[in-house]
Every structure is written in structure tokens, then in C-alpha cells.
Amino acid sequence: MEKINDRLLNWASILEPTTRLQAERTASMPFIHPHVALMPDAHLGLGATVGSVIPTDRAIIPAAVGVDIGCGMMAVRTQFTGDDLRGRDLAVLHAQISRAVPLSAGRYNKKLRDTAAARVAELRDLPGAAQADAVTPNWPLQLGSLGSGNHFIEVSLDEADQVWLFLHSGSRGVGNKLATKHIRVAQERTRARGVDLPDRDLAYLEEGEPAFDAYIEALRWAQRFAALNREEMMDRVADQVSRFLAEEVRRVQVVQCHHNYTEREEHYGAEVWLSRKGAISAQAGQWGLIPGSMGTASYVVVGKGDVESLTSAPHGAGRNHSRGAARRLFTRADLDRRMAGIAWGRSDAFLDEHPDAYKPVDVVMADAADLVEVRHTLRQVVNVKGD
Image 1 (cartoon, rainbow, N blue to C red):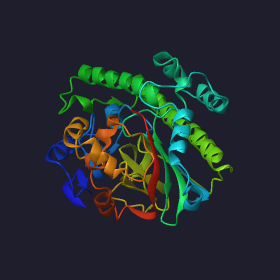
Image 2 (cartoon, rainbow, N blue to C red):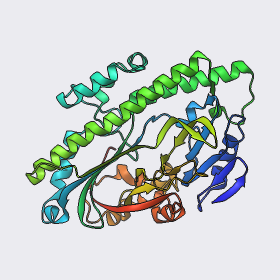
Image 3 (tube, helix red, strand yellow):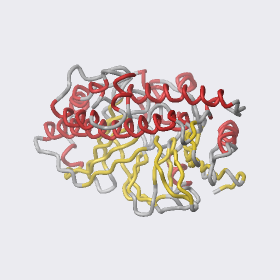
């Protein structure tokens, strides 16, 4: 761990100067308590540094959570082993999953599925549903859809040849619309206070004002939507695997975690709003998930409860190159080589997700050695993404 200053601690051995400067601006805000923690996968982000943990006292920065509220991971360890998959055409399973779950930005379910109905009913009864209705009336059809970018569904094998189902997604279009609305409100409120910010994305809301309460309500609703979205997709993935192997999936272990979210937590003797933007909770004994990029390893971990990190850990490999730069740097032929032996979408659309567009995940995990203990290492055999 590197102490950059009293208000900024860093666990990343690979840290771009622009990323450091962005984090220093966030750490300079007067309501930070006690410090910002940069995770091993930290990189420049919109709103705030991706891979940062931001504790705030009686205030909250909506852009620090970002527009994919509740984005995170879910994994299921099954009873199957690699022997159950070997010799089978995994491209068929890839196609089955791709049909069962709507992929890509703006693509949702055409009708409300029976499996999603109870989850939609729960969300309708939660505070925040009226806000969701106002910004995105079709949000029920978004439940059980993946999205694009680095969101994925994978079938993987661990070090013991056990089959895992693994997916990454968040609160979809409705979460984006809610976040965008409240980021704009925070900017308006901050301007009205006459506050001179080092970065407009650090606009904040203060406890005691209605705008703060409205954001917290929307945030908690979107975080629950994201968790239920992952559950709905996992049900569909498990169903397709059951059909493919002609045996019902048994869920030996289930792990789920957010990595873009805010919770009320106690740190250094004070109750704070802890925003993890690209970070997972890593309290002592807590299970978590840290995915690598496509074609590389992912990890099932247990937290060590490190106090200085605000009991947090990285959420993935972290980008090394922007999406545009990745498209200029890498070729389809190289991506084909890197994905050899994996059933995947085989499209130029995924060039920006090339493994080398991200930090080496083994370096990230070495930097995180004091934060988490690795329990399982997963290597994908099926990778489903939206273009």
C-alpha cells in the first residue's frame, strides 16, 4: 500500500498519472472521511476513478457511484465437472444462452416472462418505483437483460475442474436514467450553493435536503433491481445448461456482489456513506467475485477485512486502454488466438474487450493479496457478450 497523502491511499502498482490526479481531486473534498482508497485495478473514469472507495460524511456524490448503479457479479458453482462438457459442441450452449437472455445495449425482453413477474412485483412495492416509472416506464422488460461493453455471461471451470456459471451486469437503462437525473440535480444544487469544484463531476448532495433523500431512494431501488436482474439471468442460464446437459443444475454455492454502489457503513469510528465505484466489499470472511477480461482468469475470493482499504477489494482487471485505443491497437486475428478453445461471439465488435485492453489480472491480484484470499480460479469455456 502506498500513502499518497493523508486523504488518499493506493493499492495499485500500475497507476497512470491522470488517474492519480483524478483521485486526488476526489480526496480533496471536505466531507471525505477518513480517506479515499484506490484499489489495484484503479483507472481513469467518468465521474470518479474506477476502482476507488469513497467515504463521505453527511453528503454523497452521485457521479462517484456512476450511471450503472448496482453493477456487479453473480456466480453459481454447479455439480458438473469438465468431463460433462468435454466432447460436446459448446457453441450450441453459447447459442442457447444468447437466445435466452437479451444481449447488447437497448435490447430488452419483448414481454414479461413468468420467471421475472415476482421480481418485478417486489420492485413495484419498493420506495423508488415511482421514480423508475417516471424515467423509464418499460423497466419491467429490462429485468433479465445483459447489456454490452464488459458485461458478460460465462461458463467456467475452476482449479478442481468444477463447472461454474458466472455473469456480470447491473441496473440497465433504468439505472442509467435514474443516475443521470440525480447527477444533474447534484450539479444544479452545487451551483446554487456557489461552490467552486475541482471537477464538475464531484457535484454533491447534502443530508437534510429533499434531493439527497430522493437520490438515496432511487439508488437503493436501482441496486435491488441490479441484484434481481442478475438473479433472473442466472435462472435462465442455469435452465439452458440443464437443457444442454440433460440434467438440472444443482446450485452447490452461490455468490453475488455489487461493485458500483453505496451503503451506510462504519469506518474509523464514524457512520459514512461508502461509495464503491469499481470495488467490492471485502469484510473478513465475506465471499466476493473478481473477474478478469475475456480470455483470462476470474477469481472467487474471501475478504480479509483490511481496515485501511475500508474493507474493500478490486472488482476486476481495470482498463489499460480506452475502447477507441483498443480498437486501433488490436486485431481480430490476435483476439481469435487469445480466445482459442473458448466458445464466444466471434465478432470484431469485441475488439475493445481484448484481454490486453485491461491490466494483467495476475498483477491486480498480487496487489490485492492483503485484501482478499483466493478460493477458486476460474477459466472460461463459454463467453457470451452483447455487442
